[in-house]
Each structure stands twice: as structure tokens, then as C-alpha cells.
Length: 316
Length: 308
Image (cartoon, rainbow over all chains, first blue to last red; front, top):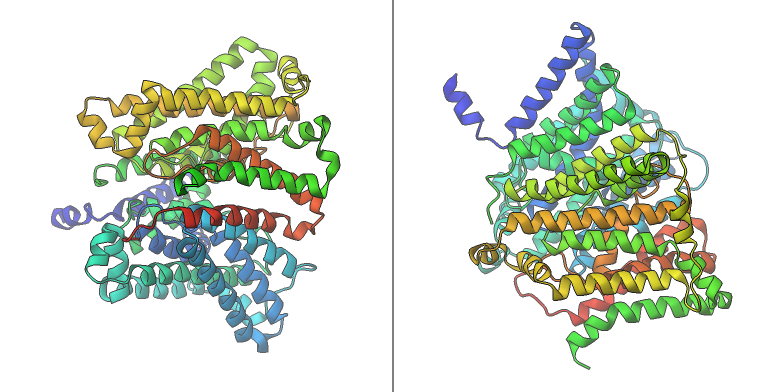
């Protein structure tokens, strides 16, 4: 037992899971055990969306300091709007809609990296500027009434089996695939290598530009998947649907133990952090905290987690 | 003209182009009154940009400056209005909190992005507690300062020049400024040379807090009532302003005058787009396009780095 613990406590992601479990226990202790299962089910449903975009953001952040994708919220919105409009509530057009939404997201990724590579704009500003353009495109394309998602998408996004959301299972598979990609494929190893030392990676013959390009495209595609699922989940696309994911995507990555300096990714950490973030809000709601107190506590806990977990390993 | 000279002039050229375009589209803005109206909101943006610049100088990034400016507004519209002494004390406490965050980031070697991300929730939460719904009143003296009618040159322009020059002198020609920029360039070398990086970082964060407070006060003087969310966009504006002004994220390479010019360019771009009468759908997209356009000009002037 102590042996397992000794091994586990050096894993970067363990803290986010411990924090999530702690918050969950505090909540059910307060309610006297009531709703323990329901809370977990809800946490899994809502965390799913932060996990999808968190995975993309994690890959981008892992490619090294300064790399971050701020266009995720706008891409989510664009994908949602495109999917709903192309599908037009018609189940037969489901695949067409998914294809169109992913195609649009792909273009956003290409555009982002084009700005970074060709115009040499720092990624923060490049993805920020492009997010403005993407959002305007979504606004102008998605004018008019709210379109409901076709039935298959709706039920895929909201269906639960034994309390476990189907979408969460889908994202679990996605996460496992990505974890294997990071550990076992040339592309994944290249991302980590570039994050640790771009120059050494370049000298070792890794195509730095192609790897970064693929990473920004991957992040945009995952944002697209999130947008499609989210519009299925919430009964249509909305122009502000991506908003909360700007901070959430970065927060889950960092709380999950992925190094902000790049070169070290943690897929399980994304899950722990996303569940923790949702359970935290649930706990504060259960305690009857006001909006102000909720915000303060969220901030204080993010800072506490990073103070406890981060720090010493960050050497340059 | 040499590349580096051209590069340092780029912020000025961008501002001139945006200003020229605005005058062309709407000639009536070419007056004392027109400039005053267009540029008054540039003052709080410029102050927030300067605050962000202090953080960027030491290679950090502040994602909480927008909510902080909002919080300062809320404190000033309530406490400072009803009890000036207590209000001033609260604002000083805010600056001290910023210094403490700088010390924490340095001593535990934390990523500033995450700490300030958490901090943005804290500022917003306190602001919502103080002022749950928009309201409050700006102190009279604040309103009269922001409504100042200076002779010949509109107040916002004078204010921007003064802010830029004062900070330029302080950061480029004082020993603290040199140490701070050195800390951005090579913190280890500066620490070896005997300078306390802890004190430097705390000082730069405190300065950022101070200018954040000034930004909040000047914004309240214009809006005359407060709202916790009023300055949420300032975080992005301030980062963009520093970069437009020729600053860089890493290496302590910043320019205070450039940052102020960058902030003015951003504020003007907003007015310009309104005068252009493009559809509201594309309003925000056009802002992104302008940002890309200005930054694209920088590309051919930046030396290429082989490894990137």
C-alpha cells in the first residue's frame, strides 16, 4: 500500500484527483450522503466538454513556452453554429454537418498557425486576433433563430448508461487514444521533445514546424468536436457557448499537472482537474455560497492547487 | 533607414495610419472636441497597458488586470465615495496584494499565467461582493479631473504623453528599471550579480498594481458609476497594447512610450470601425483584422530565429 502511494504521489496528475475526491466528499458530507451518485453523473457530463478542449490546449501548451490557443472559445461557437445550420434538424444530414463543422475548425487551426509561422506573431496574440475573426464569422453566419440539433446528436450527447454519460465514454476513448499517441507515436514524442528543447529537437531532425502545425490543427479540431457535442447537449448553438472555455481550458491543463513551461503532458490530469473544477462549483452551491464568495473560492483554490503542486519541478 | 530604427518607429506609424484613416472617414473628428471624445477612453486603457507592461518586463503575464481594474472601480464608487480614508486604505491594500503575488510567484517559481488566472476570479468575486449590481457614484474630484478642458490640446492626449514619458524615464533610466529589465533578460545572471530577484519582482508587481488602480480610477471618472465587469476586456487590450507598442513577451524588451501608443491605436481602431459603419456582426472581427495587419508589418523587420 505504502509502495503504491510512494509511486503515485510523484505522478503530476494525482493531486487533481485527490482534490476532486476531497471536494466531492465534503459535498456529500454536507448533504448527508444524499445525491452522491447524481453529483458524479452531472460532473461527468459537464466535465466532458472541458476535457475535450483541455486535451487540445494541453498539446499546444506542451509544445513549449508561449504556446497557447486562445481561439478555442470562438472555434467552439463556430463549429456549433456550422453544425446546427448544415444539419438543419435533419438526421440524414448529421454526418454532413459534422464534416462541415470539423472542416471549419480545421481551417481555423491552419489560419492560426499561418499567423504564427508566416507572420511570426506570438501565439497568444495570433490566436486572440484570429478568435475575433472566427467569432465574427460565426455571428454573421449564424444569424437568426436557434436551430435544434437532430435527434441522434441530441440523444448521443445526453444519453446515460447506468448513470454514465455516453459522451463521457466517447471522450474517455479519445483520451486513451491521445495518451497512446503522446507516448508511442513519432508525432507525440516530437511534441514533448520540442517542448523540452526546440533547438535540440530541431538538431535531432524533428520537423518542428510540421509538429507545431499539426498541434494547432489538433487543438482546433478538438474545439470543433466540443462545439458539436455541446450544441447537441444544450439543444442548439449559442453565440456565447464557448465563452467559459477560455479560462477552463487553460485551468484544467495546469491544475492537471501539465507543465506550463512545456515538454510534459498529463492526460489523466485533465480528467482530474475538469472533475475537480465542476465538483468545486457544486460544493460551493450546496453550501449556499453567494456568487461573490463562489468566485473568490474558485480563485483561491486554483492558486492553492498550483502552489501545492507546481513550483519546485519548474526549472529552466 | 535601418531595420531596427524602422521597427522602433512602427508603433508610431501604425497610430498615424489609423488616425489618418479616421480623419479621412469622418473629417469632423479632426477637432479638439472630436479628438477628446474619441480618445478619452484611451486613458484608462493606456494605464492598464502600462500595468501589464511592468509584468511583461519580468517575463510574466497578468491575466487578472481587467477584473482588477473593475474591482478598483467598485471600491472607488462605494468606499472611496462614502469614506475617502477607508477607500484609500483599501486601494493601498490592493497594491500590497499585487506585490505579495509577485513575491509568491517568484519564491515558489510559479507560472504567472495560472496564478493571475486564479487571481482574476478573486478580484471579480470581491468586486461582486462589494457591488452586486452596477451602481455606486464616482467621487466628484475624479469626475472633474477626467472632464478637464485643457487649452489647445485635448486632455487625453496630454495625459497619454505624460504617462508615457514618466514611465519611460522611470523604467529606461533608473537603476530599478535597469535591474527589472535585466531580470527579464537573464534572471539568473542578475541574481548572481547580487540583485534580489524577489524584491525586483515584488516591486514590478506593485507598480502594476499601482497603475491598475490609476486605470480603475480614471475609468470610473469617465463612466461615473461602477460595474464589476466593466473592464473584463482590458486584460486582452493591455496585452495587445504592449505587443503593438513593440514589446516582447520574453527578454525584458519593452517600451513604455510604445505601450501607450499601442493603447491609443487600439482605442482609435474601435472608433474608426464605428465610423466605417460596417455591420455590427463584423465589428469585432475587423478589430482582429487590424491587430493582425499591424503585427504583420513587424514580421519582415524581425530577425529570423533558426530554431523556431
